Figure 1 (cartoon, helix red, strand yellow):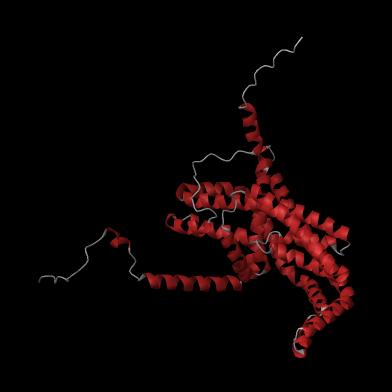
Figure 2 (figure 1 turned 90 degrees about the horizontal axis):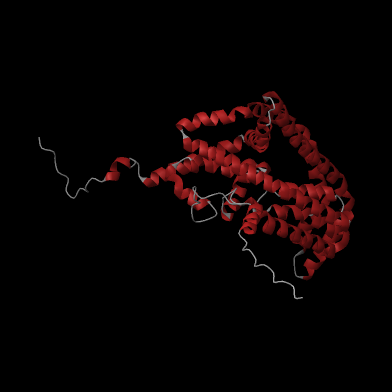
Length: 394
């Protein structure tokens, strides 16, 4: 029996073997649905994923110390002990600083309740002159109560005891990751034999994370010290607490500066009025603009490789998914997601183009950038010889 011929049938193409049996629109919808389900699952276990990734980032940050000690002949057990002490030291110092700062803040804020109430009263009187109704003013005045803020801070301090379970989990995970960090190089070497793109993507993620943490930490400390000194000279209470807040919010891209300047500016308003508040804001803006906008980009270079728009969007995405810890770890989380979803897939180059900060792809064969010291040496070596000076007249 002859096979019926389908009229106007399209000729077979070379891509027909690679086409999906499902329509493209259906594939996109299924992908979006799967992403929503995964996001909901991640959000449900944010208490686990957030501390686990934080532990991973801390171990990645101190891993070069272990390699440096091994190259100098230290035994394996000694390098592991040093890494464990460094990891635990970082976590303990950060936790103690936050707890002490929150405790001092909870006891200091109620002292300015009368000044805050007077400020709210004068503000509502000004709004009444502009025609704002008394009902709206009463609701606004009742909501703006500094005792509410003190209650929130006291509750936050009391909830630290509830974090004991997570803290034990984090300490145990840090211990296990630190002990096993010495064998990661061998594991990656075995993966590279079969999947070289996966190894390259993970190594680039670790390198970019270290560069980002190094630069952000150094310049965050500089900004925190300068902010603390400026606030202490201006007579703002809790200057060290606001400096610690400035250091922590430095890890939050784009809006971290705003989160760090609001509390000391409000406290300056209560103490010295609008003039002192403006002075605090101007000093913060000057320090952060010079350090973070002029100096820091010269050092961070291509470590992150994400556009400003992408960093702004992922900040809110990870904060919604994992809470405040997601906002602080937004850049490393995005680098890991990019490594696992984009860098290991040769067909995902279009996504890499949309994510990176430059439209052109960096040349992997290009020589590494030279430091300023090397450039100065080259300039000194290529300076033309000056002609000999003429003899002095007799």
